[in-house]
Length: 181
Image (tube, rainbow, N blue to C red; front, side, top):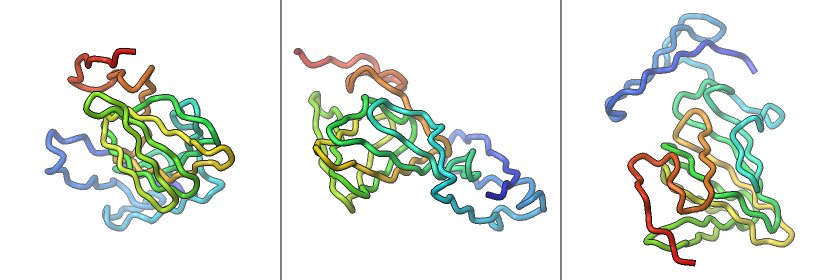
């Protein structure tokens, strides 16, 4: 994979007024306009599992600021083995889009004071809003759940939690009433 010098823009107070970062140099140090940056392919053997992990699944990164120079996108994937579930977690300020490649994963979260789940199948997309605690489960006894992930930040953010009610890392969340056991 060819390397390219990159610059990272300061985060503006209002993201809707952001302008694209203009790299100081183009490919291999050549001057160039930001709209003339090279496309970068991430080959299967170049993927990296040196990314924040959550117990019960294995994530890999394919596109990130560090791997490809992405400034606004992280992409990768994960696998949840049969009968397993991830620990509860959220992805901070990153919105997440999930495409189901194979298997039938279940995504569990809290809404209106109770746990709810969304069951997904191959070809489905699942949207997880920023800061929403959730967990991925694979109820199958014999089939891996394999997904492709996209996040709205250039690096993976994972905040592992003790349960779905934990608000660690969520700005202004305060304390929520937990369900009575």
